Structures are given as structure tokens and as C-alpha cells.
Image (cartoon, rainbow, N blue to C red):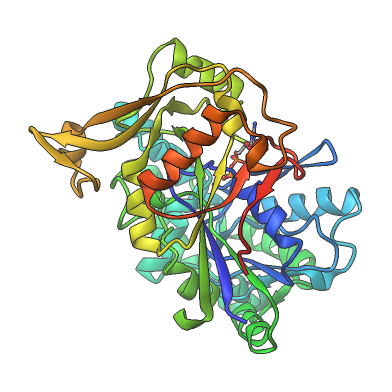
Length: 429
Ligand code: GDP
């Protein structure tokens, strides 16, 4: 039974948390394969809100195995707090339901300090990072100076690796960033606590995922962020520090590419992005304000207001092309109730030429202006709709238009934050 990957097709915050929670009901194992606590998924089940930053969004289903894969970067304090909060509410009753890869990289206090200090120095050119050390931890991974979860369990080795890393980091922090240095002893002491708390979960996670697939288990691969934030294929440099394409699920979870059988793309029925960078369909006016208010478009953990705009079929098409999306889950259609007309960007015009796929360079993005088609709106609230046929005619026309514009079939339509506010059109396993 091949795995199903779930990816964001825009700039993140598409509602992946809700959709993964929903699909997790039919899965045996849910694997996060990249990113860290720069992701914030909001789940609403029976009116109760849960925000997850590291633990996969299958955790609200008892008995499902949630795996944090080798491609992730993990802040141990954040993970421990998240585990405690979930346990306090009766989730994760069995430690075997949570697995943490010994190959995942550890976010250490100096990564956070570097992240924040650099973002402050960039000022106007800020990328809009979450300041949680994700970028610097991935940099260390690629520079081969990172510390992995498994290293925490070898105190002598950890001490040596930390000492080497700190010599460089402290110099950088003090001389270039004007920050205070870190004491190795303090971090070694912290690591003792982490080791003790995380030991029940740490494992060769890739091997466990491969074994589950081999045993015919249904595995869901949970993407974080979105396609346009992919470090190679997104709006570089305004991107995240990992790959978000479905292809990266293979490396990040430790499974062969053939093991991924299906890809579900999540697309919000309008567009948002957080932080700097290109956003051709952005609305800087009262309509954008209204989308932000009605869609509650504020970062799940940072509270940062999201930039809002019309649906951009160009970026979603790009995501579908790169990730081989088999079906789309469209979310937040309910938020568009009362807007009329509703605009959809079907192409970009760049220097007088029409493009149906996005440019690859910053220069191209800066010159892209959206080509819109206007569709009539509707006024009825959609939260109680449970079948496509019960949608107001214009709402149905709108999602059908989006489906055609992006070129992939609709698998799911979400018309509210609740698990039950969902119309399922196709099986995704
Ligand atoms: P993620 O990071 O992709 O999981 O997205 P976020 O959790 O940051 O943002 C999605 C937000 O929208 C969350 O607060 C969800 O509860 C909410 N949400 C998801 N689907 C819908 C929907 O169809 N309608 C409405 N109104 N809210 C939704």
C-alpha cells in the first residue's frame, strides 16, 4: 500500500492541519518529513482548538502512530511542551504513538539567537522568518556541523560536537551580531533533561516508516509550509529553509520514491502569505482586510497578520506540476461568502507577455501582474453544507472554475474549520 503525501500548494497556511487530521482517520501512521516549529497547524475537533507545531496532525486520533521524520529540525523544549500539553488533554496515552527520528536535527539556543539577531539586522530586507532557529539549524545540517537527536544520547560525543560548534557560533554571535555568547555547560545541562524526556520516542524512524509500508499499513506524509516556500522552487529568497515539494517527502521520511502513491494538494480558495516576498494577487485594501478578518488570517502561533489576496491559479498550477498532485483539497470557501465579484488570477502578464506558469527569478516576480477573471459571488453561509449539490450555484461555479483553472480534480472541499465541515469527493488512499 503506497503512502499518500499531503502538501501545501501556495505559501503555507492552506489548512493542511485540518485536512491531515481528517485523512488521519483512515491512516495507520502519519509522518512529518521536513521543517520544524515554524509550522503551526490549527485543528478544531468538537469545537475544541488544538495548535500543533511539531507533532503530526494525526495525534488527535488515538492509536495512530505519529512520526517526526529524519528531514525535520526539532526544538526539544518546544516538543516537550507540546507533548505535555497533549498528554494533559488525554492524547498520546501510549508513548509508542509518537516516534522521533534519531537523524532529525536539533535546534539549539544559539540557532534561535542567530535567527532573531540576523532578522533584526536585515530590517527592511527581512525574510520574515519565525525567529525560531529553523534556518540556522538547517544551515548547520548542510554545513555538516549540526547536532542530531541521536547525538544527544552520547554525552561525550555531544560535548565534543557542541564545543566545536560553539567556538564558531560564539565568535559569530559576538563579533558580527553583537549578541551574548553561550556557555557549553548550560546547553549540556539542558541536553540531559531532553535526553531523559525524549528517550521513549527516539528511534530509527525511517526504518519504522519503511516497515509500516512493507506491512501494508496506510501511511500519510504530512507536508509543512507550501510549495511556493520551497527552498529551490519557491519565491527564493523569500522561502523556508527546506524543500516542500512532494519529492522531498521521500528523503525526509526515509522511504523510496516509489513508496509514494498519491499526492493531495491543499489550496485555500483565496491566497495568503506571511513575511516578505512576491505576492501578485495581494489586496492592500478593505477587501484584503475583510479576508483577513473573516478568514482569521493570523499566524497560528506567532499571531502575525497574514497578507491576503485573490486566488492565484498560476502558483497552484506550478505546485501541481512539481508535485504531481492527484487531487486538490480546496479550503475556506465559506470565507468568500458575501464577496462579489470574486476574482481569480488565471495568468501573469510579464513585459506584455502572458504566462500561465510563474517566473523563476526575483526579477520576473517583480514584473508579474495578474490577469483576472471575475466570477459572481453568493451571500449564503456555507458552514452547514455537506454535499456539492447543496452549495449555492455561484459557489459551486467558483470551485469548478478553480478546478479547471489549476488542472487537477477536486478531492475535498472544506467549508469551515470543524472536522465535519467537509465534503469528500474522492478517496485519497
Ligand atoms: P496549516 O498550517 O496549513 O494547517 O494552516 P493553519 O492551521 O495555519 O490555517 C488554517 C486555519 O484555517 C486554521 O485556523 C483552521 O482551523 C482554519 N480552517 C481550515 N479549513 C477551514 C475552512 O474550510 N474554513 C474556515 N473558515 N477555516 C478553516
